[in-house]
Amino acid sequence: MPTVSVCGSVNFVACQLFALLMAVWFRIYLHPSKTSPFIRHVVATLLGLYLALFCFGWYSLHFLVQSGLSYSVMVFAGLENMHKYCFIVTLGYLISCQITRVYVFDYGMYSADFTGPMMVITQKITSLAFEIHDGKKRTNCLSSICVFSMRMPSLLEYLSYNCNFMGILAGPTCSYNDYMAFIEGTGYQPRHQENANGKENGKYKQSEPSPKNDVISKLCTCAISLGIYLSLCQLLPVEHAIDDEFVSTTPFYLQVIYLYLAMLALRPKYYFVWTLADAINNAAGFGFNGYNKDGSPRWDLISNLRILDIEFATSFKSFLDNWNIQTALWLKRVCYERSTINPTAATFLLSAMWHGVYPGYYLTFLTGIVMTMAARAIRHNIRPYFLVCDSYRKIYDVITWAWTQVAISYTVAPFVLLAVGPSLKFYRSWYYCLHLLCLLVVLVLPVKSRRRQANEQQDGLQKDSVQDNQIEHHSTDNNCNQKDKAT
Image 1 (cartoon, helix red, strand yellow):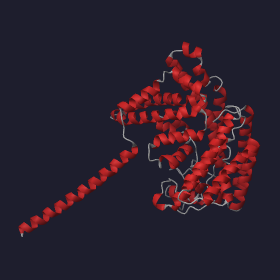
Image 2 (cartoon, helix red, strand yellow):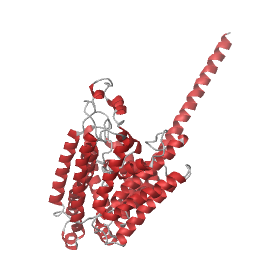
Image 3 (cartoon, one colour):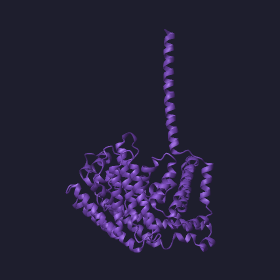
Image 4 (cartoon, one colour):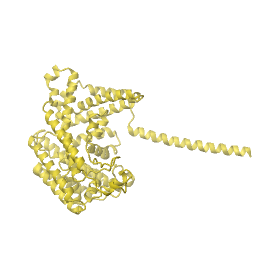
């Protein structure tokens, strides 16, 4: 999240609280049983554009321009390449706006980052384009949420999906089909039947689940996160980690601890923003994801993070899987599953381009590539030795937790520092130690790519199947020969 002024932050929080009130009103008074999808689309879109105009002024027109250009590409481009053209146009427009904001306006201190909402809109547009393409190309359906009956949305449906008041400011992104099910009021029944704990005809199916408890719980999480962030952000600035006096007078192990605490103090800002966005969607009735085993409803369909899983992650991958979940799913659908050359590197590079043009972003995600490769090699080669008993497994978990937190803090520092000078100064103060260590691990402990492992496993299964058939055929021939001799 880019740095913003106090005024921009106050406007953002005020608009999100207003959106929360509107979400409750929207669920009660514009319930699908009381009004048509057309009215729900119109109101959701107009409220979203109003919030955008209030926060960003006329810069919010970029949201409509980006959506309009992409919609034109989807309408006029052929099905075969529609998703590719749409991806290039949408991401290209986002990057051009990011370049303008950073290098034309004041560097890193613009009062309201209008490209933030465009990042989410980019995810939505490209996800929809790939879903439509995959839905029509049934034989090559890679998208995890591909639906064969996918149709081209109307302009109103398209704008409602991109610019609705629930997600215009902070997302999260979501599937177009899930959003349409919410608008039309059909988002409950399928999940009742799948996850109602065997009670399809019981009480869980007869009443629509209420999001009240989950919304209250998430608002409490927001309040705690905001309190922690406001209390610690000034006490533990990340910039202090590159202060010359601090680096020269502080033992290295204390520098490591300080960096971890500084990043720990920074994360509640994201917890607040993403949890509040999730609560707004839930308050409007969006986000239902079936039932737990005890029959309680789950409202995590579009949740963007799992706080405990982040703070207690024992691997680099586990941390990333629970941080900005919807963005990780988007990267997987549009890049990782489709890249034919080094999908890990391609995914990290796309993530850097999507985040913006600050050099620190690229340093972070390039570092993330080697971190991921090294973590994968260690897990593949070292972890099996610690799975022999519970005590070894616990020791492994403690060690990997500590290393994960240090590795994440080291990797993300340039993401916070933004500029090249401070970022390289930080890495120099650590003597690039984790970069060198990761490269050494990758060279000493090579590991096959997951795609290669899957192909080898599939080839092995095919060979085993052929061998079984040959053995069975040979056994049948022997039995026949024995019978012939006996005769």
